[in-house]
Every structure is written in structure tokens, then in C-alpha cells.
Length: 252
Image 1 (tube, helix red, strand yellow):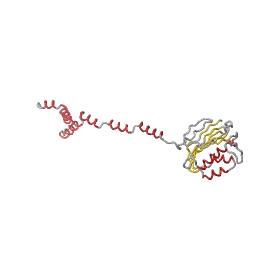
Image 2 (cartoon, rainbow, N blue to C red):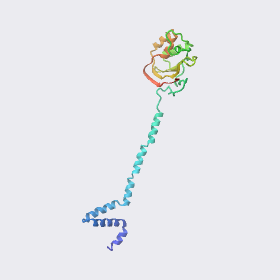
Image 3 (cartoon, rainbow, N blue to C red):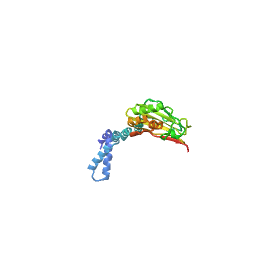
Image 4 (tube, rainbow, N blue to C red):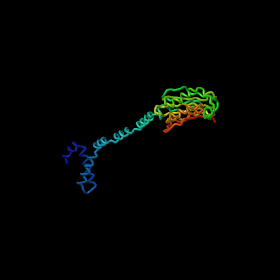
């Protein structure tokens, strides 16, 4: 035992670990050899110094930090926001409209140029501006503008034509609108106006133009009301597409 003193001093950590393990084993039980080896191996493997190294190598924080960074909510939100911002309008030539107040008109198409003067119809009654009966003498102020507009529809001339009715009716009954003629044989039509106690901006709709013969017949009609209705209410073909929804205001 005298020779073990320097041994203990030279390898303090290992000797102490082995001594504690042996004394514990001898105090507990009968079989001393095998339990002592396994106990010694256990103490050596889980020694505080080596344990610290193992924890540093497999530290959970580094892997969890990387995972959180890859799925960080902020990056997902930025991507969604960009996608929403870059979403194109339904019809590139029609600006989406915010709801407005009485008398607020929608924007005109941002594509195309005016082809004819605006067709002007006077009158102070709804029959002149909304649904004139056949044979009614509507106050058409510029017949040449109506002929120009119907000719543009017949010939599918790209551009904008429009009408305005009831400007002098005290805002009780009115109807204005436009048609954007496309180069592909389609058209976008929208109208707006007052009807007694309400103001409505109707939907902007896109559809296929009727055959040119339809407008040829309109041009040959001697009745101003019929020709005016050809301009405002010609039937568009499929596919119909809503470029912008309607909105309106009214008084109780």
C-alpha cells in the first residue's frame, strides 16, 4: 500500500473513481470481481469531463435553431404577401373599383382610344334612358355619333365607344356607359346611372361580340330608339367574364 501513494497522486481522477467503485462493491455484496469492472467502466464513461464533451457535440439547440430558421413564420408571411400583391386583375384593361357615393362614376378602360363622340340622349324620364318602347321618339342629340358607334361594333374596330342619357334630368333618371371593343372579337361593356332614389354602377362584363350582320341591321333601322338599344343592350356571347363587380347606393 505504501507504493500506491505516489500512484494516487499522479492520476488523481482515475484512482479516486476506481477506489469509490471498489469500496462500494465490497460493501454491498459477495461477488466482487465482475461488478467492480462494470462499475468502474460506468464511472469512467460518465465522468463529468467526458459527459460535457458529449453534450456539446449533440447539443439540441443547434439543430432546433436551424429547423426554426428554415420554417420561420416571417418568411412564409412574406411569400404570401408577395403573391397577393403580384396577382393580376381579371381583365387587364379594367381597374377594380372601390365603392363610392352618389354620382361617382367608374374609371374608363385603361386600354384603347375613343373612336366616336359620346352618343348623347336627352330626356327627363326613365323611358328615354333605360327602356324606351319601340316607336318612342327619344331625344337623340347627335345621330352621327350613334351611327359611328354602331359601325365600329360591326367592323370590330378596337377602341372605346360610349353613351350618356339624362344629363339634364336632375339626376333622377340617367344612364351612361361604354363598350371597349377588343381586337380579338370580344367586348367589355359597363353602364351606370340613377334610377329614382338609387345610384348603381353595374358590372363590367366581357363577352364575344355578335355577328357583324346584327349591327348591319341596326344601322339600317330608321327608329332612333331601336338603334340606341342596339348600342347599349346587344347580346354578348360566351364566354362571359365579370371584370369588376357592381356596387350602388340609395336613399331610404
